[in-house]
Image (cartoon, rainbow, N blue to C red; front, side, top):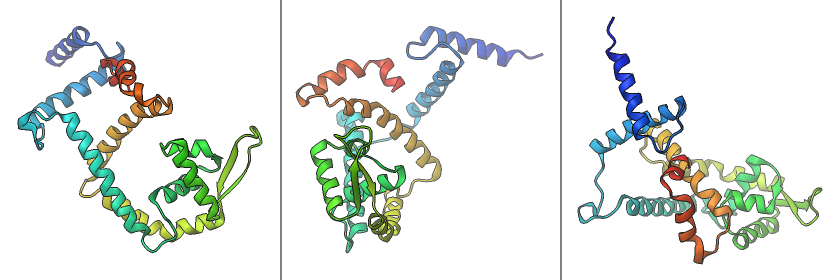
Length: 225
């Protein structure tokens, strides 16, 4: 019997035990370590070029710039989707889409779901109420809170624009194939799971950078985020 494969597995496990600092010491941690090791090897061979790389521009700088660019591209397509509609801003139909998809909720729940600050979110909600697209009522569990629900006219306003909204979202994903879309979803979800709890803490601007660096950016926390 050829035991070469078994010997290779044992050698791999020994390497895992010696090098492991960020993974659990069970089979799940072992599988994640193997996956990340393979990705590191692939990336070291297929590392992309980017503007300014030869001058020392960091990958973090490129990622931040490209995320900003994608946000601007998406807003441009959204404006086109809203052209000649009753919507004033992209946020208005995003708020309605969330209410339609997830059902009634408090105003603050809707604002947090859209990752916005309270004053901006309340302005959007008030505009939607004025339009008659949202209905509000007192919460049965907390009289200080209002429960908001999308109204029939709000659903009708969404329905009128949904074809164009779907067209815009399809354009934003551009020329990515299915596999690339799935990988992008995985990576963006990982970033979202890292940043959302930080955002929800409402840390003061003067303390935000130092607090996040100190609390969240150890090697293990970044791996597990």
